[in-house]
Structures are given as structure tokens and as C-alpha cells.
Amino acid sequence: MTVVPPANAERLAERFGTPLYVFDGAAAARAAKGFQAAWGPNDTIAYSLKCNPLVGLVARLAGAGCATEVASGFEYRIARRAGVPGSRIIFNGPLKRPDELVRALREGATIILDGADQVRAAAAVAAEAAPQARIGLRVTPPWRERTDRFGVPSRMVAPAARMLARAGLTLTGLHMHLGAYQLGPLPPSGPPIHAVNVEYPVSVELFARMARVLRELADDVGGIEWLDLGGGWPAPWDLADHVSAVEAALGPDRPPLILEPGRALIRDAGWLLVRVVARRGRHAAIVDAGVTQVPCVLWKRSPVHPAAPRSGPERPTDLFGPLCLQHDAIAREVPLPPLAEGDLLWIGQTGAYAISQASPFIHPRAGAVLLEGEQAVMLRFPETDEEALGPQAEPLLTGPESRPMPV
Ligand SMILES: Cc1ncc(COP(=O)(O)O)c(C=O)c1O
Picture 1 (cartoon, rainbow, N blue to C red):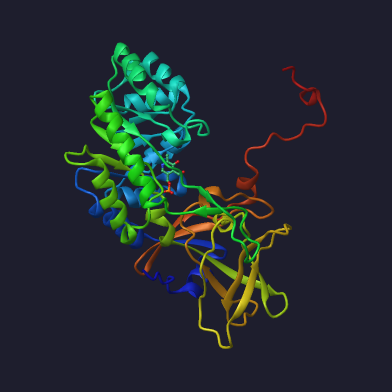
Picture 2 (picture 1 turned 45 degrees about the vertical axis):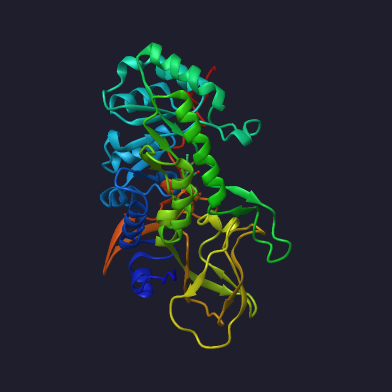
């Protein structure tokens, strides 16, 4: 599917400045609904918040029918702030602090325990669980048991279920996530932008293999009412083969599923609007956002579109950011017409793993807006110097307060 950049780049730049993250609310909602339609009405689509935690966007996806998958207490609190009730949150992650676990249990969340330590921790606070709280267990893909630090090996599922049962909790779900980052071999040639080569989406075959493992395990252990197949899915318009392979692998009377798509819902609905601040020869330019605003360009190529038509032949062009880093190139050798200072460019496919991983390195982080048709809604203001610095202790050079504190 061809994805066209938003209109009105000049007006957006004038009103909100650049660089600017721009999200298309209708496109994200369309993706969420398409993803739901590709599965079934009893399956839960839980938007993976880590790939873009902007509160307004999380709320927009919740409004389009998504539950929310979170991987920490911090993300849990973001989801709650976006208005997602505990009963619509899937709580993942290898670190759940005791107070965070208790809150999620009390609020009726679905909690995916990530290891024997978390099974013990949940058993210890079992009395706190609201009736609608659900307990699942993350299982390591059997072919990765020696190398994967997430989840428990299959043989641990039955003992974990028994330990939970003794504490009064029922294990009702199994979870597996194949990873958003499947590392492939580095390309043999091409512009040197990629630190790694990320294979996305996860292949049909691997998802089918995972589904078979989970179904067999669920049948062996008994009492399993739902399966969570994690993230790594393609966009809804490319999903049909994945769905039919997984359905076939699960067989008849499959349990309801939880799916945790991140990129599939939001990658193509997000854009970074940047301005050319200087030219460097005929085939290179410096723009006002670097790789720290869009870290995803370090492992994938993003399409680049001039915001207004430009005349002249297209030539492979490098777009460098303003950071003092040799590898600060947000696009390499992209075919572009001759650029002039002040030109606006759209960097595409930057909805996922850009703003969530951005850092105020050398420049503070950009603001973000949500487009709803002709309307733009501010989602996050550009970071001020104070916000980028955070609440730092002032160095006290005189007086008794300047004495170092004993530790
Ligand atoms: C447990 C879990 N679920 C879902 C996702 C989302 O993955 P993706 O954005 O590739 O769909 C991730 C990403 O790392 C994850 O760790």
C-alpha cells in the first residue's frame, strides 16, 4: 500500500516549528480496526505502547478498540493516564516492582509473569488480585532456551501453574513474543547507515511454529483459556498469510488470542517533518533533526519525500543531521531532486520506535502533533532546555550544604 505524506507541511512548520513529529490519527485508527478485522471479534488487539507512548496517541488507539500492552510500571502509568482501564492492560516485562505488581493485580490487569522470580512475587501478593485480574506466563521459544533471557522454559510451565494455584491464583494464559528485532545478516553492500539489519515483520513460518508450540503446551498443561502471540506482525494489509498460517497451526476450537502489534499499527501513520538548514555540495544536505530523534533509521531505511515539488533530476542524496557524530545521517543515497536551504522534507515510517527512543543528545527533543483530517492537535510540546535537563541537583559550592553526604 502506498502511503502518502500529510498535506500542509508549510502551515504545520510555520505553526509548530521543525523538526516536528506528525501522526495521522485516522490512519492509526484504520490500522487498528484492520488488524482487529483480520483476526476475530473474540481476539484482543493490544497496542504495544513501547513503540510510541504519546498519551494522546495511546488514547486514540484505545478509542479505536485497542487494549494496551505495557512492559513496565512506567508504561502502565502512561496507559492509565491515557484513560485505559486496568482490565484493558496487558502487563509484560522482566521488571515489575512490588508496588507496580500489586496495583496491576488490584486493577484487574492481565499480568504476564516473565520468570520464576515473578511467579513467586505474584504468589506472595495473590490476595491483592481483583476477580478480573488474569495471570499468564511468558514462555521462551524452545529453540532459544539457551540464549533468550525472557520467559520460562516450557518444562517450567506446569510447576509454575501449581505454585500459583497453591497461592490461590489460576494460570489461564500463555505468552510468547518472537521479538521486534530479528537480526539478519548485514547487507553485503549499500550505504553505511545500518548499525544492524533488522528483519521485520517476523516470518509466517516462525509465527506458525510458535503457535504450534503454544497450542501443544496449552493442551498438556490444561486450564489455559487464552494465548498471547506477542508482537512483530506486519501491517494489516499484509497480514492475511500470517493469520491463516497461525489459524492452521492452532487447529480447530482455538482459544481467544491476544496480539501485541506495535509497528504494524503506527509505523506508517507517523512522519517527521524536517527542514534543510544547509547544503553540503550537490548531493548532501544538513537537516534540523538527527538520528537521536529517529533512532529507527539506524536499522531501517525510511522513505523521504520533499514537502513541495522540486524541479531538477533526482540524484542519490545524503541527509545528515545536526549532531557531532559521524553516523548522524537520517537517510543515505535517497533519490531526491536538488535541495535548497529552507526546503521541508517528510521522513516516512517514523511512527514507531522513533519518539519513544529519542534522546535530547545535543538538541532537545521535537514536539509532536496529531492530525485529524484538517485539524492538528498538539500532542507534546517541543522540549525546553529545563525539561531536557530534568530536575538536577544544583551544585552547592559554599556553606554546610556543600558537604558530601555520607552513603
Ligand atoms: C512483549 C512485546 N510485545 C510486543 C512488542 C511489539 O513489537 P512490534 O512493534 O514489532 O510489533 C514488543 C517489542 O519489543 C514486545 O517486546
